[in-house]
Length: 409
Image 1 (spheres, rainbow, N blue to C red):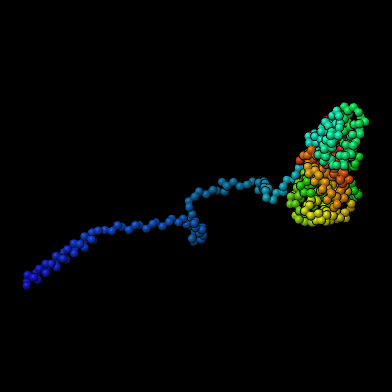
Image 2 (image 1 turned 90 degrees about the vertical axis):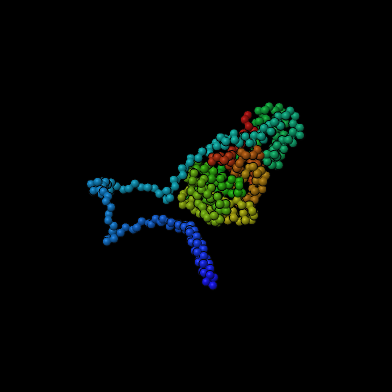
């Protein structure tokens, strides 16, 4: 019995020893140290406000300048006005330089070479045909075709051919010089040397001359108005421009630029405004300024014939409250040929056309449009455009034009 109790005690003691050994072994295993927390970000505090009174900080030891060491302005400098500095934002733009246009006298003669490059196909073709030894019916048909191709028109062509046939028959022998003289005389008669091609700008003593410029947009109408202002200024006239084409955004700006170049003022209104009102104001300003001429650029829309009639008719009536219109110039693009005649008919129904301006005549070989449009409207071609230059608008001179057609002798 005692032996059994002793054995149990020994077993308990042994188990306790083993448990303590295991626990001790587990305690010897150390866990890895925990990671250190990240350092807080460095925050730079804003500079503190200066402290005054009891909170004032002790001043730092810095060398101080004496009054003798400080550079003071002299008495002259103290009362002197500071230099003016121009503000680029509010500074007025420099005034545009006024140009001196080229004199108009003989301008077409100077431009004849440019005209001849495009036009003398007609003259050379006619001279070649007329120089044939035998002028049969086929040859005369070729003469007719040459004239029709140049847009001379059917009736004027038939008249010219009949006169040529008669004179060649009477002439008998035909030297090149005689043929050239003959052709020049007949073409000059066809063009009309006796028509009045003056741009009338004279009016009553107290009212400026008023010129209204009409035409389809795209024919160079606004540019022609600006160039016409140069022609008048070159002849010693003072000009006021009226930008009555309010339906094309760039028209007024374009016209004003032309005017500024020769010192002519432009009267304009808001985009889409009443053209008649602007035209009226332009004439009114012209009277107030004592200008010689008022040029009015009108709209050239052809979307509806009725709308165009109403618009131009209103402009004409309103302007005539100041006095009669001295000129109504129709601007036509010479490169459109017979289509230009259709435009001419429409405008002739709207206002009384007194003269024609043919633009881009240097860009087409169909110079016969000069004859055709004169016959269509019964009014003369007064000005022709021969290029993009500012002074390429020239008074139409029939003799110089015919000389360009037939070339040098």
